[in-house]
Image (cartoon, rainbow, N blue to C red):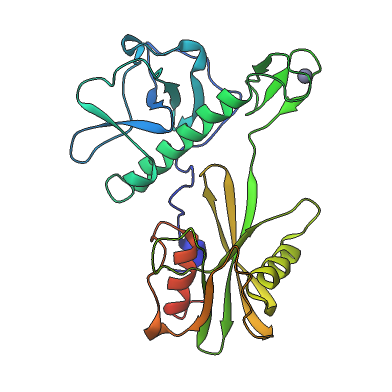
Length: 283
Ligand SMILES: [Zn+2]
């Protein structure tokens, strides 16, 4: 499997966010993903599912908060929020989207994360960030329009680079103090305003582990909706310099070969996909 063949766990496909969004006809058709706070409602079956086939009006859902997610063929998908005071319906429980990985098909894990993301976007954009007046949702794209100053707000996306650094038969892996005990991963960091991705790579690698890199090659990308990243993966070669960690973002780093790899990130992440592609000699 090459990078391009890989379907990122959190990609929206096969749902597609087509616009203009269809008229809401909840009684007739549609599929539903229901969230409460930062959790998604999941059936207790085996396997569990996040896709509900009926309009969950009876569960106390606020109709104004319903969000169009996209279309799967001719079927519209919606997200809705169960208010905090409403008990979870019998036969269901609440879970985080990441905890569904491996328990549901990837498409449903992605759908759960997307529903959480879009409900949160709706909650945090009900008022204009510039003038404070109410916004209204546009039906022609995923955006909100301020009813007073006409500012348009789109869902926030935070692009981040993720980069595998090679030196001979070794790769550079590093440990953030936030990682689970013993785990190492590749270098990652957010893109700053005004930067192109190549500049972010050089800056982040230099800041975090003090080495220089060259030969930047694109690997693949992945939505990472926790809460709003787009990870853009690259492979680079070591160009010079010894490892010098910053002791803030990174508490340890080193060069590893195939047979000395430490515990790695979850297989659902692009960082792990990069490392696995290198291990298979696919880069
Ligand atoms: Zn405004």
